[in-house]
Length: 300
Image 1 (tube, one colour):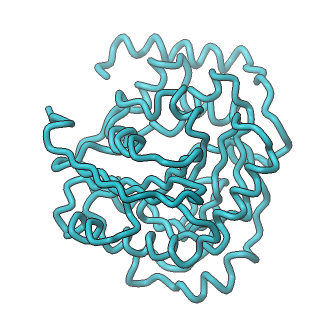
Image 2 (cartoon, one colour):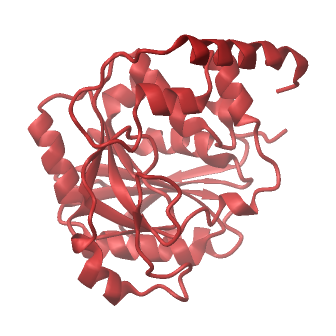
Image 3 (tube, helix red, strand yellow):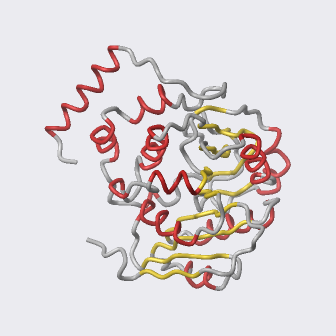
């Protein structure tokens, strides 16, 4: 059992009064990707932001590098405490109204932030959950754009990406769940952040969206013109211990995560406005009931 609070540190610089987003980035011994991510935020952001990194372990020099950066706040844990605890710990340093959760293996394309902020301003209230749109060499869902610009830092074709990213076809989509995403801090706090029972993190994304759904939020929008390049799972593939998130989601919410993302969020479908209550057919209700009953015979 990891004692979460016994070996943690926090460092916060004076925040610019004009900062728009607080960008929280969990990282785990992934320095080269983190440096590329931070470099892209510095070069390609149109607005001033607060950047907060959570350093899990940092045995590869991450802690020393982040500590030397005058424009990065951070939290640190000697042990790897996973994504959920990391995100909730960084919340203590947030200085703006809007929290952006970004992965450390993402490269922010130009104006990614200006476009998201413009979308927020057009909404006019804080009851939303927005995502930027990832470009991926191997797209993992219909929320992603296929674009072959490298599978790691060494093969990354930055110049080619910068010439082509804006012309890649994609429309706004339903079902914001995955990072990079943005939510108002009041919504984050009312939802209680990311649920630590899903630590180290699998299925914590749809769980967070479910909590927002139960709060009455129905605007889950993927913004097509706000784009990042995502190398994909550069930390999670190294994890040897995973939570049983699939079954935990069923136990907690009484349905599979795919039922929620497909029928409630309609994830990946063309955006057509505020989501409505889904019409769940009898066959799907029976399937989810069977899934719940089957948990009796499983240890989760």
